[in-house]
Amino acid sequence: MKHIQEVLFLLGSLGFVVGLKMMGKPDSARKGNLVAAAGMLFAVLGIMFFKHAEEGIHIVNNAGLIAAAIGVGTLVGWLMAKRVQMTAMPEMVSLFNGMGGLCAALISLLEWKFKGDSIATMPTGEYLAIIAGLIIGTVSFVGSIVAWGKLSGKLGDFHFPGQQFINIIMLIAIAGTAWMNFGAAADGNMLYFYLVIILASVYGLLFVFPIGGADMPVVISLLNSFTGVAAACGGFLYHNNVMLMGGVLVGSAGTILTIVMCKAMNRSLTNVLIGAVGGSSGAVAPSGKSGGTVREVQATDVAILMKYAQKVIVVPGYGLAVAQAQHVVHELEGLLEAEGVEVKYAIHPVAGRMPGHMNVLLAESNVSYDKLVEMEHINPEFATTDVVLVVGANDVVNPAAKTDPASPIYGMPILDVENAKQIVVLKRSMKSGYAGIENELFYNSKCGMLFGDAKDSLQKLVNEVKTL
Image 1 (tube, rainbow, N blue to C red):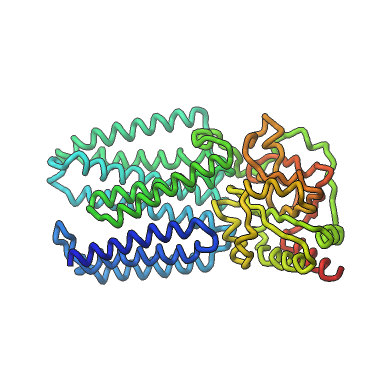
Image 2: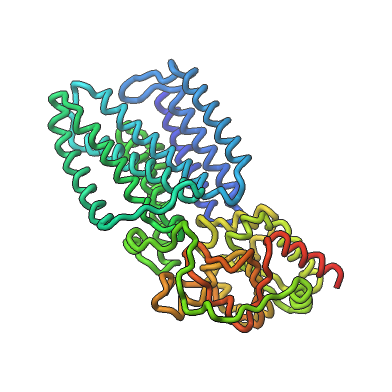
């Protein structure tokens, strides 16, 4: 039995590694997700049907309860995934990640209670795995719930003087309480253990509350890495290689993604956690451009521009997801290509509300993967582009990132749409983006604003192109 369990764990680990690798490319991401899910199935089978190699615990005795829990979780997860809109995908990811952190914290809690009288002789390494899983899992759970609330608009920003200093004090208090707990628990005193949970919960709140809306994708990625580390601690506790492997993969992938996103924003992680760019209020920060001239255009004029262009680049943003306009923009793409127009999509690393948001959105409407071009590859092409169609994007095309040292997004790499011959922006209004600042692009003499719902505006363009 032991050898069969090890084979299942090996298959599970391979599924995680291969699935994660496949998720690195848009055209194989969906299959990669299925491969990783198959790996999880092998891992669960290895736990359910065979005894623990060291402790001889027959998990199969609880197979009914385990199967029931899996059934309920599968049903709830399936219903949520089927019903969620693409605009709500980031908060769902944050919510699911929080559940992972909660599971890791509960593992540490139950393992601590299970040890009972043996706590006094517990090896230091085992204690560190338990307490680290408890702290990190709790912070990940509470922080992810706060992130979910902020992304869904249920929670706003919360600031008070000296908040970052207090966070540092909280970390020191958590570490000190965890150290005191090791000695106190040997005498049966559980006060410090529960105090660790309370302090970690409070820190999770204070950690995420002050972070601005524009930085939430980075925070979600960071919290995801926290959950992975907490899960890896559980793998250490149970000598479970597949759990350890999964936790390490999630932790390392989340950390790498966090670094990549910070690089794309030209900001350090410390600056993201302290700088708090963008809030939930949607207020427009002054930029000195409010007295400029905005040129409004009509759908007929834009359709003529695009139909007789040689090259059109579409820049998708969160507004495209809000309007559920991905299918219409794909239809417009097909009409333009039938007229001999080259059409591409410019994808910024932090467009939308989560990494890969735009890729997934456009893939849903069957846009060819080779037309989705990353920022560093598409930027040189704007100078030879006849028309750029910006659909719901804002901060990622704001020239203030290059021209205004006082701007909170200064230094952030952006899509160089201002280099194109003509720029058309589809927006409901002149309201600011997620970073809460005005966009200088809207006052550019080459830029025309087509106001209205993105889906309705694109449908008008589709109708106009058909009649020309």
